[in-house]
Amino acid sequence: MTERKLPLSGLHVADFSWFAAGPIVTEVMGIYGAEVVRVESEARVDGLRTIMPFAKDKTGYNVSGWFNNYNAGKLSVTLNLNTEKGKELAYRLVRWADVLVSNFTPRVVERWGLTYEELRKVKPDIIAAYEPMQGFEGPHRDFLGFGAILTPITGFAHLTGFPHQPPVGMGTNYPDYVINPIHTLTAVLAALRYRRKTGKGQRIELAQLDSSVSALGPALMDYAVNGRVQNRAGNRLPHASPHGAFPCLPLEGAGFLGEDEDRWCAIAVFDDTQWQALCRAMGNPAWSQDPRFATLLSRKKHEDELEQQIAEWTGTKTPQEVMETLQAAGVPAGVVQNGRDVLEGDPHLKERGYYVYLDHPEAGRTAYDGPGFRLTKTPGVLRSPAPCLGEHNEKVCKEILGLDDEEIAELLIEQVLY
Image (cartoon, rainbow, N blue to C red):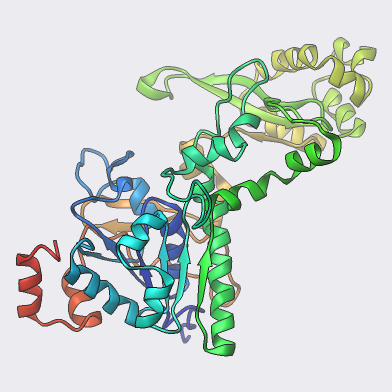
C-alpha cells in the first residue's frame, strides 16, 4: 500500500521560538509533514530544556521530558544571533523557509532583524507568525512573561480556586499549551491558503494576552450585561448541583515517596432526573429524601451539607467504583486521573494509541503526546524524537544553508555556530 503524502509535506518552517507557545505550533506542523528547523542558542539555552521532569538518573540539556515532548521531529541548529554572521545565517534560513515562527518580545525580534519588514526583503512571500506576550503595540509591548504571568493578568487566576481562599491559578501555564498555539496554527494555515491563492506572504501577530482573554467570554459577558464580577467558585457551577470532586478510598503506598495517595471522583448533576438517579445509585439513603435537596435551587442553597453527605458515600469506595456505579445509572462521573492513570491505566487512550514511544539518544525510550487531532486519510506521524541541542548543525549548514566544511569550521571558531 502506497504511503499517503502528509498535508504539509514540502513546507519549510524556521522555528525561532522557545518554551512552549511557539514550539507547539511548529511541532504540529512537523507532525503533518513540514520540515522544521529549530534555531537555538547555547549561550542562552531554552529554559524548557532545564525544567523537570528529567529522564531517570539523567542530567543535561537533552533529557527534559517537558522540552522533548514539544519538539519531536525537528532539526536543531545553534546560532549566535547577536553577531552579524549569525544574522546572515538566519536570513539564509529565511530564504529556505515558507513560515517563520517567533514568540520573543518585540525588542528581541527587532534586535535580531527578524521583523516582517526585514524578512520580506529576504523572502517576499514569507509568512511570519509572531507571538509576543502582549503584542507589538501598547504600553506593555516589551513586558516579559510566560503562561504563569498570563494566567493572572487575563483573569483566569481570579476565577480559579475557592471563594474563601486566595486565587490558586490553573496549576500549569494553560495559555502556552492550548489557546495560544492553536490560535497561531489556525492563522498560519489561513495564511498558507491565502498565499497559495495570491502568491503573497503575511505578517501574523498573535498577542498571547489577546488570545488568552478570548477564552473568558462568559465572565466578560456577565459583567458587560449584568454588571456582575464573577468570583472563584471552586468546582461548583450555578446550574448544577452536586458538581465537584469527591474523596474516595486512597491507594496505599502509591503516592510520592510511598505515602497513601488521595483519590477523587468528579460527579456532575445537571437536572432532577440525574439527581434521582444518583440517589438510587447510593441506595436512596434517608438524607437524600430531605426536602432541602429536592430541587436544583434548594440543593444550591444547601450545597455544603449536600457535598458532605455525598463525600461520606464516595469515601467508602474507590474512584473507579464510584465512576462505574454512577455511569451505569446515567449520572455523569469520572475518575480524577493522575499522570500514571493517564499514561498507563486509561484503557481508552491505550486502545486509541494516543501516546507515541520514541527512542531518544540520551533520554532513552519515552512517551510523547500523539497528534491532538487526526485527519482521516493523513493522520500525522511523529517521525523522530526531539533533537539534542545543536544536533543537526552540520546537516542544516550543509544541506539547507549551503555551507562547506571550511566555512562551518570558521563559524565554529568565531562562535557564530556553537
